[in-house]
Image 1 (cartoon, one colour):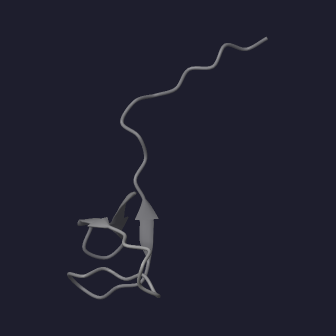
Image 2 (cartoon, one colour):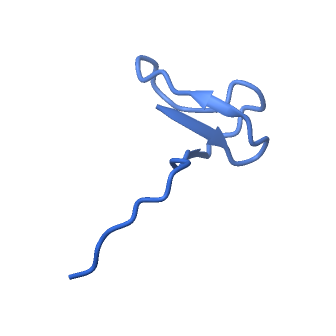
Length: 45
């Protein structure tokens, strides 16, 4: 799954084999899940 770093805004691939998650570029530990580029439309009932 693709995340991006909250500090340096680079895309980060998360490897769940290792304990702990952090940005490999700046070492920041807050990663945000990337939102999809399309907009989902739901018909109201």
